[in-house]
Amino acid sequence: MSLIPYSSGLKIYERMPPKMRRTVGSLMRPVPRRMLLGNGFQEQLKDLRASEYWTREELERYQVKRLRALLAHAERSVPYYHDLFRAAKLDSATADLRSLKELPVLTKDIIRSEHDRLRAVNSPEFHPGEANTTGSTGRPLRFLVDQQTREVEHAAVWRHYLGSGISGLDGRIASFRGDFVSERSGGPLWRWDGRVKELTFNTYVLDQDNVRKMVDELDRFHPEAMRGYPHSLFILSTKMEASGLRLGFVPRFVHTSSEQLPRHMRETIERVLGCPVRDWYSQSEYVISAGECSEGTYHQTMETGIVRIQEDAWGMERLIGTGLWNMSMPFINYEIGDHVAIGEEDCPCGRKHLVLGSIEGRVNDVIVTADGNALSGVGIDNFYEKEVIPALAGAPEYMKLVQDGIASYTVEAFRSAGLAESDEQSIKKAFRALLGQEADITVKTLDKMPDQKKWKNVESRLSPEDIARLLRERSG
Image: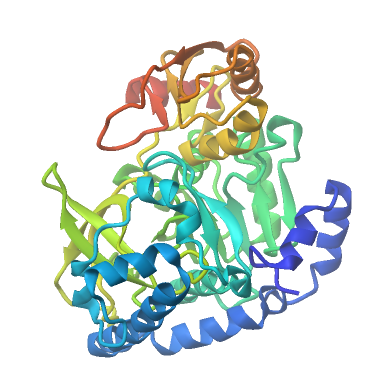
């Protein structure tokens, strides 16, 4: 039974009551991770490890082979692409990487308006699951992702883990992400996650006393690697340093993802935790991914996606990607919403994969509550999706949390059909559960969708000095 989303095994596990899930997780603890991830994952990882040091020519030949198969399937089975390719006179049998320049860009607005026509008529054959973006680079988007796409992307992440120093598939990992969004302060400080065989920590309660307890548990668990959102690991490291806490061991590496990693965060995490940070770039759509090697270079996973760069109206290089594995809803020439620069130099690590010189996106801030609890932007994105939106009469097309002061916040919201009368109180109630019952929350209903180059769904208007002071004061 594979537990990679969106397999039937994961669906069964996630539908269990919490107590039963803990019991099943304990029973699964002796089961090797490779068995839980399944044969499809193992085959993908084997192939990716074999191609890790291919030449650029070998990688591009592989891309063309996958691209032709994708285009043939899309023309045959996806109504939107059937019409598009006919109009463009595209021949999938002879297409190459340059052919993508002849096709129009697939935007998020097109996906919303053509959603049903972008779905393959034979999509059930690929065992897809419903997925969505968090909205950190635009309005949230809903789409389908195949089982095989999840498997190859998990395999790409694990190739990155193995290249960063983890001993093998059963290496111990501690996670600091947004897994406690439905429990927050009422949940445990950590728990064993049987589906991924990781010790996962509650990042919604990173106050000083809890951080001390977490450090003790980390020393007991002794993970080879730690992974999480950059903000969460930065907050953990900041509070450890403020109180003189150190780990009783040295992890082999820290794996960050889902947010941008500013230099000051990287330096703090590496200084406090005593090991290198290896960053990972990807999206919920699983179109383009890239991992940071030991030389600090981001190598694009060319086996799973094709990168194109196109200058936008702002004079910046926008990332256009084609995912090579998702057959139920292919994203071909997809405008991801991030901006990148392509590196030309060879990397001393020996990999010949495309080098991404810089990546701009995922620009949410960190929120610091009056009691000193710090919340990452991606964690709040998860909170929107799982706690706020279900409480409303209809999902807003746009929502943004702004911290105006130490205990004052504004929630900006836009919904084309308008917000219901009850929505304002529902929004306040949901956010007070996260930010504290004494939080002063104002709901600002917008009359149109904001027009902006880069979306930021979580914004702090506190100065960096105020944030640092708050963290220090609450760490004393």
